[in-house]
Length: 65
Image (tube, rainbow, N blue to C red; front, top):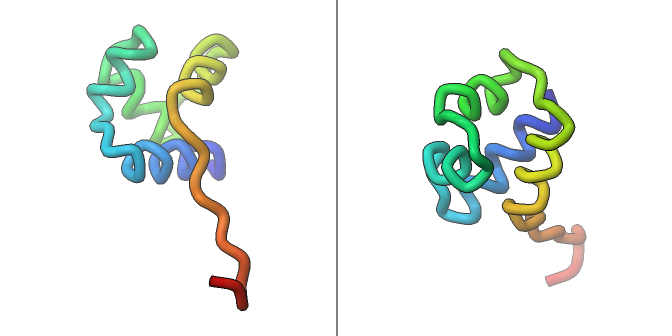
């Protein structure tokens, strides 16, 4: 579940729609939506493609600005 939430947050932060990610990865938007909701398990190549496409979230450290 954590991976899927990470994908959703990274997607939103990047300004992508689910349809955008799906098209760039080469899967249907229905499939990507199911992956993001945790209703389907991603294949290894899907995980690699999504991880490569979506930039990591910015990390913040408490107490520092």
